[in-house]
Structure formats: C-alpha cells, structure tokens
Image (cartoon, rainbow, N blue to C red):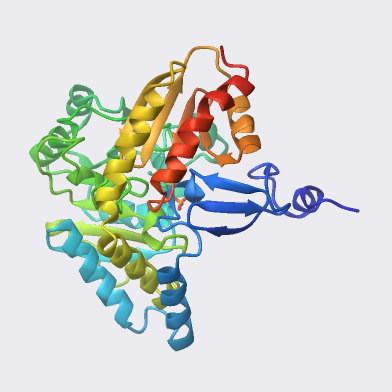
Length: 394
Ligand SMILES: *Cc1c(COP(=O)(O)O)cnc(C)c1O
C-alpha cells in the first residue's frame, strides 16, 4: 500500500519537503491528523487562521456569498469588495485606497509597483526581512539562499540592519523611492525593533520624499492585539501614517486574500493600465475578510489577544530553558537556552499534541489563532517543560 507521504513525494513539486503530518479537520484552535490524533494548533496555518478552524461566522459568510455571487472579475464591482475597502480604511483611521489581491507576495508586488510610479527606483529594505517569493517581492528579501538561484531580480535594492535608524538614515537619499519594513519581523523568528523605530522611519523617509511602506502581512489584523501592529502602543512610540501598508495572512482567516493600502499622494500613483488581477478582491474572499473583521470586533478579540499574549509570555518565561520571549499579543518568538535542539523540540511538541513552528534553527514561533482559549494556552504551558525534557534539553 502506498502511504500519503509517498504519494505526496511522487506528485507534488519538491518545494517544501514532505510534511510530517497530514491534517484532516479542525475546530477552533484544535486540529486532527489523518490518523485521528488531536493537536492544539499554535501556528494557525502560519498566522493565517485568525478565527481558528471551521468558525461558524466564516463558514456562513463564505457559504452565503458563494451561493449568491462567487466571482465576477474586476470588470464589475461587488458589494463585499467595497465594504471591505471601506472597513480597512476605517480601521487604519486615515484616508486610503485599497488594491486587493490573493496573497502576501502579491500585496507586496502591487506596493512595489506603486513605488516605481514615484519615478524613482531605489528601495531600502532590512536584513532578515521576508517579503515573499515572487520575483518582485523576492528582490526585496535579503536572504541569499532564496535570491541567488533566481537572479537577476529587479535591482536597486539595498539592505540595512533591522531596527537600526542610523543605518537607515545613511542609506536613504533623494533617489530613494521607498523604505520597506515589517513592524516586527515574522519569518526571522519575531524580531522587535526599538520603540521609536517607526517614528524614525517616518521621519527619514519624509525628509527625502521617499515612501514609507509597512509590510504588515503577518503583524496586521489583530495579531499583536491592535488592528495594525504600527498602532500598538505596547510596541511603538507615537503615531505614524505610512504611505503603503500590505496585508494578507490573517485577513481572510484562511481564505486567500491580499490587500495593499495606500494613503495620501501614494494612493493616486497607480492609474488604469498600471496593474490588475482577475481573482483579487473577489466576493468570496472579501466576504470572508469582512466576517473575520466583524468577529474580531464583536468578540473583542483584540483585548483577548493582548491578555492571552501576556499570559503566555509570563508562563513561558517561568521556564528556565526559555531565555527570551520576543513579540507581543499572539506573535511570540522564543529563544531557548544554548544547545537546545529546536528540531527535536518541534518533534516532541508534535508527539505531545501541539503544533508549534521553528522558523529559524534557534527560534520557536507561536502565532496561534486569535481565538485560542486560555485553557488551551495553559495546557501548552503545562506541557512545555516535558516537551523540552523529551527533546533532551538540559
Ligand atoms: C508571509 C509573508 C509574506 C508573503 O506572503 P505569501 O502569502 O506567502 O505570499 C510577505 N511578507 C511577510 C511579512 C510575511 O509574513
């Protein structure tokens, strides 16, 4: 009999390696694998399943929309598309225009094209950043291993250390079209910049007439306890109005959608003929995103995320083999004591019934559904010491 691993290995492109688990169904922050084993999901499809699995509000929004009007192309408007654009600009609190797409990398592609319409080409990005895998977004991503096999990529990109305002000030000049930065770096394992970093980015870009572009694809939509991470007073001083904001992951709660928000003059840079998409902003995806936003609001999930994040942080720091917890709300990166093998920790966590993530060899990332319960969080905290023991951590 062939196993699913063999079938996967034989027919899917070898971009991800063969996964360890095949998941079959989920409810809330719980998932079951193909053998019926239950797991508490602390990864949420990589910060995507904001409402967990099979949330009734999302199921009914998508079902109703699909049975009414599923797709129309951008030759036509649809009610949920306009409503979602209005809703997002309302949450931002500043006038903005929105371009909808289907993923994070596409949200960044649209923003990248906006920057080219300034008449400048130079982009300043940060080391360890992740902006996506398509050629444009990849051109902004510093990681050599991702880039090198695909060069030449769109050029005129320079990288500076993340969180270093001085290095940024030295790199940005009057030829700079934009500075692109994640408020918290996600794929790098959750890196948090100094509290005044975003204010400095705003000041430096404004001084040179460059656009400030925040990649909130992972940090946005309640992940850190505020709608957008740049609005989070626990993380950042002051208020900034970025020129560009990109969103995806948590926005659709698992239904693919990306969004590029542009404020002020940047909102007028793309004109007919400059960009397009067939699927982007389709009624199903935008209805799904509206259901996600409605539920976050109705269930006061932002407060829940802040409180639960604080509980997790405190509990994790009580474990002596956790040397550091970075991040805010339900976006947490743990550093473990020297010598702890995070690959073994991952394996032990799976065996104990918890889905966690190791984005970098030394780092554990928790980005669970925003609906994770206190009970589930406490179960993980209670199990974590034994997971570390099992992984052979001294
Ligand atoms: C995941 C991610 C992307 C890419 O999103 P995809 O949907 O995988 O294309 C871009 N930027 C950040 C910060 C991300 O976390």
